[in-house]
Length: 489
Image 1 (cartoon, one colour):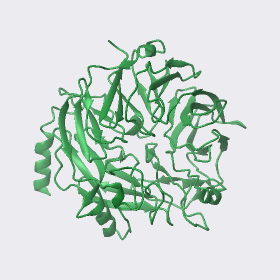
Image 2 (tube, one colour):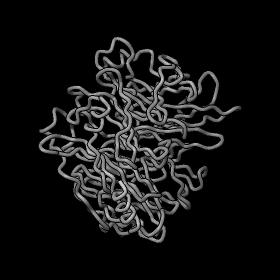
Image 3 (cartoon, rainbow, N blue to C red):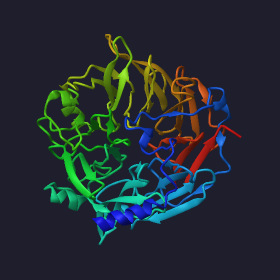
């Protein structure tokens, strides 16, 4: 171990100092997964000047489902981190898109070598996570190891992409040491990784098609010892953690959402918001989980609650209240008490928010006086067809959730929120992924269009994809390309 630490120290010494403040190190820019970014100068009026940044030529190789990340070491060059299904990771110059370094982490798994799925090849799907102080990137790569699909966890130096000593960690082998059954062939990893209190958390569901045996699974890994230290799983088959954002946190706990279980006669962890304490301690107290009263019907109809992450936030009021919101494939928004999730049927409110499944990550606009949640709807509110819907949440009252507005657009991207200072000039941004493939911007208060795409089409966008913002640029991952937008000349 002493040798490993010495080598790691030498690698990290290659970084020109510790990271500066503006970094995007995790999915939707926070532990809470709110998707909120501060962009000085990006006013409602300035949004009309958004344009593709022709100075940025971010050519890469491979399909991209993961959100790009951003790392700017003090005194060094800012880079955009992109990970592909070809198991290739890139650090791109954040200004020009030129490759600073790239590494390929073994062979991805062709779709015909998996029992089901819809990604070909299947490699790095979930968004990686950065430890900015250590200068390390963590990711999960489904890899073909001796002709066997294997989930491997990597730790890469952000200085040069080199794999750190002791890595990768074989997920299946690590779980076997804990007596936990796990099959990399049937367990998919499309959720973002999470770093919480120095511990790495990784989430698993199944593959598209729900084939074979899998369980909703969260594992914890100690970076210092490269060891899988704990696991939480649903009690029966199914209950996958499908959300793009994976687990969200409130600074004390993590919250996971689970999907449909298979043939459960008693509630067994599926269709739920589950509170997990550090170390993945889990209690059966009703304050630590929520599931809709009709969870069994949701199971039968494949209407997962776990398609999107559950977001913790503070609802304004007198007094304000700690809340968590989740959206289901049944089109409902579920609001629960963060401090007492309420068990089966214990929600504060249910809002029919869409006529169709809600399966893309939401984003929250949070101020001292407002809590508003934006999500992509495939039919609902007063809009027909695909739209952005904005839900307002208050601390109390008979109807604590209400739809404020919806605005049509064509696509299946996941929204983010920008403000100039955390409050003013709030804008909802989303890509028309697998639709018109344009960037769209809406006034967060009214839904009025502030940017309509300007016919700047992006090729190779995938559904569920989201936007990353850093240093007055927007970055969007697509097949063989990272796009950049800017509103400044």
